[in-house]
Image (cartoon, rainbow, N blue to C red):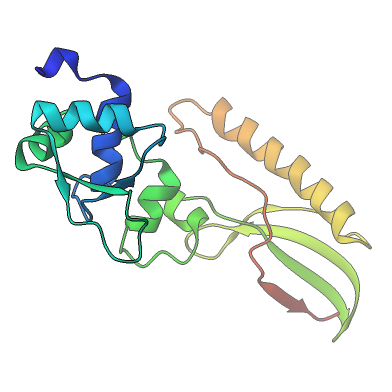
Length: 192
């Protein structure tokens, strides 16, 4: 059996037997147990005839009619050479793999999240507003004081939209990027 005769199903069996995939290219196992009537038995036997697989010892805990197939060195090389390219990482996967000290995904993306401020007695807020601060901790977007967080969020979104329009209208200004609205969990106390 040459390369052109190996079917997609047989290649999948080689990949499965070795435990490899486009994301995991290093084999970590080498066995496939099949018995009479198993859907993959004919393909496994064809791979065996081609020299890509061989029969191994069947463990005592398996049925006596089961066969353990193992990928040969030739089959291993063929399987690894015919893996599709790894998919491109998403930004979130890059964040998870990055060891740079970012606390949140928003920090990694460069998104400045708004903070919730409240006004009133401790534990009994009467008014709320959302603010976003620049890198020097100055307020650059501020919503209005409102009795509920939902209303305060709506005024913040309006202010954020106006700020974006202002930024884009200035000649030579850089786009602000994706400025999402999510609570950062930070609560500031503002005395009344």
